[in-house]
Image (cartoon, rainbow, N blue to C red; front, side, top):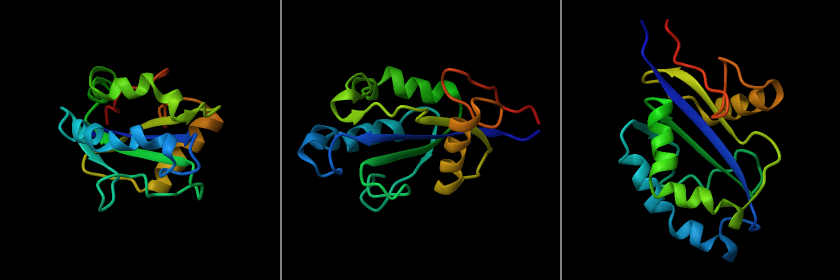
Length: 151
C-alpha cells in the first residue's frame, strides 16, 4: 500500500503587465502573509518558491502576465481548508481585482506518491491534460474530485 499526497497547480493571468504593475500592489503586499498561512496549515507539504520565498518570478509559460502556484498537500480536505477557511479566502473573493477570468480550467490536482515532488513541467502537462480531456483519476479539479488511489 503506497501513501499518496495531493499535487496542485493553479495559474492566473494578471491584469497588470507584470507582477510589478501598480494594480498588483495589494496582492503582492500580502503574498508573504498568504504563503506563511499555507506553510503553517495542517496538511501542507511543499510549495514552489524561489530565494525570495514566492513563485511569482517563475515564468514557465514565457508570459509575464501568468503566475503559477504549485503545491503539495496531504489531502484535498487540507487544501480546501487553507483555500476557503483562512485569510486566503479573502483573496479568492477579490481575485477579479487582480486577475482576468482565465476562460478555461486554471486549477489541476492529481495524486503523487508520498515524498515525490513533480517538476513544474509535469504540473503544466497535468493542467493541459485536464483542459483537453476533462477530469479523471489522472487529473481533476474541485468540481470533480477523485479519491486517493488504493494501491
